[in-house]
Image (cartoon, rainbow, N blue to C red):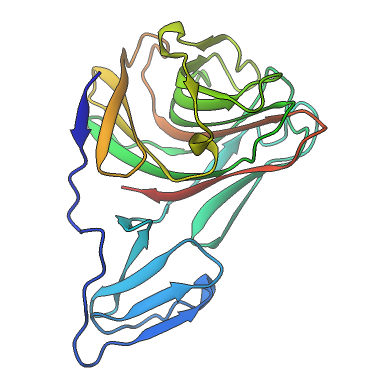
Length: 267
């Protein structure tokens, strides 16, 4: 196991402004289009605090860390679960909030929300804020990782509260053959471990690297210090290599609540 520190250009704190700086608050939809360096804007319906880092340029912060909100084109792979209810996404608050209703999926399927991956080599750090309260029954999970579009195979970091063990969690790298067979071939055994509910309610940073040879998964709870979870060959499960970045969600069981996975930043 190795631990490295995330190198970020902007610090976690907010700098003071000059004499013309001001502080305001409002909805994410009402963020001003212009600003003076040093201005602060507190969103009342979102997770972000904003600071004007240059004339008419807002920088976004969560939990004291600088983040880049998700952008670009995204789509669903298997939006409607095997049990029927559709997974949806809300982008009105600048972050992408993926919502899976109760009993969306069965034990074997899940939904992936994807965007086209850049050409390797590259590194992307996802800032995720799950909203998955503990449940005594049913299975709920979220995931971040890679997918091969032509085969729908995927390799992801996944946090799961498994059926029959709703007050505990396990996490690790997970391989799936497609979105309707999430349980084949399932978790890499060496990566199974009990985890805390922080995986389902707090900010989690997942750093993904495709160096054109291997896929590297790293995890952090503070956005600064990262633990390397696993390094796998990029073609061991996906013969052509990944060409998508994905965020997954799973909700199986009719006796528990809806769940959300929020993509707060990608950098």
